Image 1 (cartoon, rainbow, N blue to C red):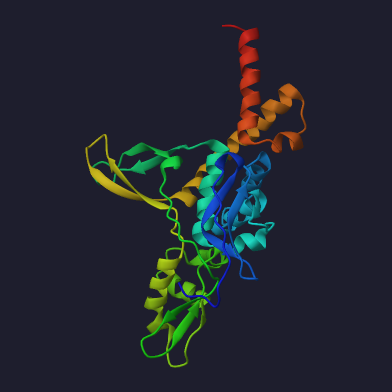
Image 2: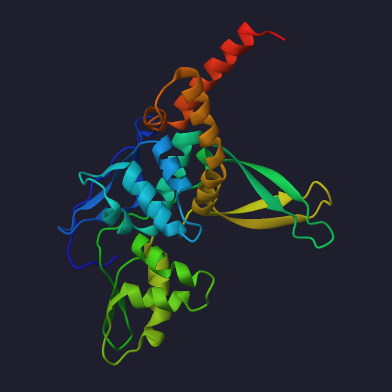
Length: 293
């Protein structure tokens, strides 16, 4: 892996019980130091309330930036704000979104798949365990890399980050999105070479060096028609859609706890989902005890 100079890096053991994880890639600061240890806290009602306030057209990249800015306590020794979250590698951001979901709601998820057979088209539930999700580490040692051309020197480039996700969101699904991404990531190119010529090599090098996206291929068999098929699943997008789908529950839970405990909304929103639901269970248990059927 070629960089502009040697960079310092340190490996840390993950401590999930403390919300401490090792990034698959890492964050390189302006001094060239590589930071791979990240400390997360679970979502609280405040972040869920933020999700409820989003405009429908808000891109997933922008939402991930804001959630990480709120829930990442640190990356290495660096404090985190939205600007730092935008400069994190895409694969690292998606990895942290999966960890954020685990801390907030546990390992178990249900994916809803649709049978691709035209004669069937039935929906089915597929249980997933986030704890079993494979994670490939590709530690970085630099912020800038080089792709050597045969006879024309080298192309200087960086790896895609959250800022690119946000900027290119309007091009989602557009065949030209890759070319636009390369324009953003290529920092210097020889005068005698065009981006179209160097693009395939740079794209290949980016693929080799970047921590992988949190995407999996699910193998399934339709219980209705017996059709065997595979379906890709974007885990970060799935986590976001799950969080957004659960927003209505937040309003009911805040109302329930305010009604029974007379706590102000601000105190309830400061709780994690697990803590809110523990109190709800206590109230429901007490109501059942006092009013047996």
